[in-house]
Length: 389
Ligand SMILES: Cc1ncc(COP(=O)(O)O)c(C=O)c1O
Image 1 (cartoon, rainbow, N blue to C red):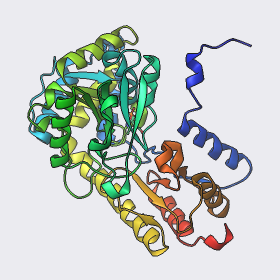
Image 2: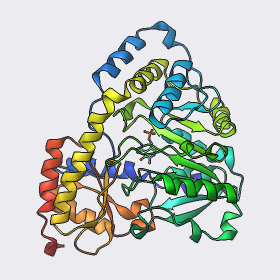
Image 3: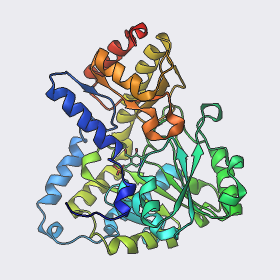
């Protein structure tokens, strides 16, 4: 048997891969499983984007190596998008770099900012990939609880000074996976002030920035001075329902954006130019494509929330994202709850403690399935007899 490195000991099987495996095993055993454990958008990518990709694929110019940073057409479209959407100016050469999906950039960012022994602040519950790069550099993780009583926003005042003194990086994501909470502009202002005071770099993961339900979310670069202390990650996976296309971007502080690009130049050679150009088309036509997708996720979240409320679940209605984060009417361990729901209804949900210890007792429900299937799942979950657990 091959002797793997000590580094490999840090990795457990990736939560979502485990859930895929669980669904596949149940199906093999004859169960009709509805998988609401994973945030994998069901909505097909807009036909116009697909048509651009097909045409671009036929262009031999695109068959050569791309560059790591992303082509000029796409970086210009990204810059224009931020100008329209947030009223901010990002230089397409200095402040933007294209990624092979935002997950890839997120995993590599700590290599740019952290040294061995430095702390990274990561929220709990969390999207798991923030840990990966911290492990790669031999960094330390300090978990910052996201509590319902604080609207699932970090209580910055409770992070110990001795940790802050050794902290280089803070990952946050809003609209939040898994809680569905959003960060308003006044909190963002406080966060930037706090980050500057403590000399900590903010990485705001905006993968769900366009899946908001009440009012548009903000970019941290709307706050004066944020460019000195922050980067943001954007993803087209949920925004344009393009998860399989593997494209996203980092933007913000020039040194960090260029640093990440240098790391990547030594690892990858960028995304296929046909995909980059299709992504540019999506961004240029954002206003025609995205409202429909947002409306769909909003209506799914409302339908689910109505039924959960009626059947005694405890939760905050999500303000964005494609998730509900909820506690069932009966207090049990998350895994026990998910297993019970799976056996009773065939609906697979994600156990909250898979996202961190503060997820204990919660489950995450993803609304990334076809509406007819979701209606069946909602009905089944709404009629569970909890006395049977
Ligand atoms: C919070 C968060 N950030 C980043 C990602 C990664 O997205 P991408 O498809 O751009 O790699 C996800 C995917 O589920 C996510 O939930």
